[in-house]
Length: 339
DNA sequence: TTGGAGGCGAGAAAAGAGGA
DNA sequence: TCCTCTTTTCTCGCCTCCAA
Image 1 (cartoon, rainbow, N blue to C red):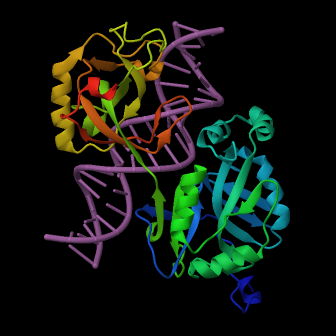
Image 2 (image 1 turned 180 degrees about the horizontal axis):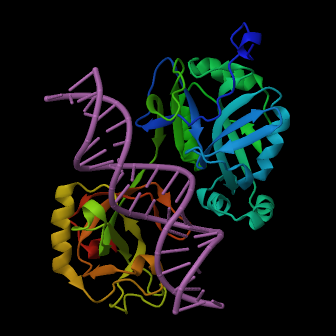
Image 3 (image 1 turned 120 degrees about the vertical axis):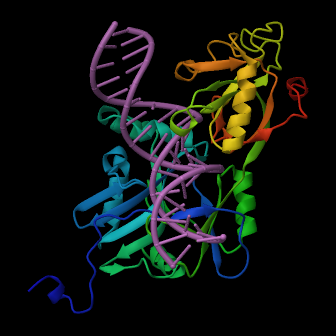
């Protein structure tokens, strides 16, 4: 006689591992059958609770329970075996800050408790995948959502993500409040663990920028013969900028980061050839601007090429976050960017 | 003590492989 | 042939470990 034999109504054991369902980037879907949530700028996390066992898992299935001890209190509200899906966020100035969260993500054992007080996190729950012996992966999102709200999860370090019917209004609110974007979910969609699905659509506001190429770093593998990333800068505007204003023509650019994605093979080859023609021993950035590990092995070029990049946001120290290459702007000059 | 290397979390995009 | 999935190559920041 097995445990299953004791359970004639089909009680499903809690799966030991689940990977999160992923959203597809896109534009805001409209019409019947969609619901909308804010996109939280944090780290994805799944919670598994089963009696005395409580664990938090990362997007790749790693156990991160010890990294966020303040979430352990959630176990007291989970009285039946359950899998939850959500996002861990750290608030800064009232909005989620990925920069603040990064301090928590890799904290050593000795610093976890200290950082949990200084930079506490909140677990924003948006889905329930298994509850009280019932697997919900095949259930429609609307049904899972209804069950989630009935659980009454609320605490000092966890909450349920609000859900709305008006996508445009959610997008507008997200933009005004500085949130990352919107996630639209098809009400009838099942949960597909570990899969990217068009039943979930994430809409984020990207920004484009024209910047000057100041150098490149060699690539690896398939890109060993071209380049790995481009080092980008903007012409200095402020005469008092650092030690290197316009009066210091040796360092005409202010470093704003690197871009290493968005290139086709043709672009890699063409751009690589042009950069090699422009290579110089003179670094166009001030010495202390480019991080040591980025400057190591970098090749510098005369700052004459302008390109366009798309990126998500500026980091706290004035770098591009998640930049992607759009293309050269032969119609633009560095001098025009400074005007 | 400092510097370098590597790991890990998030993200994006392009190319190649494999199946229908 | 087309579509989907996987792999590869990057970004950022912070950490630990080890060698000089």
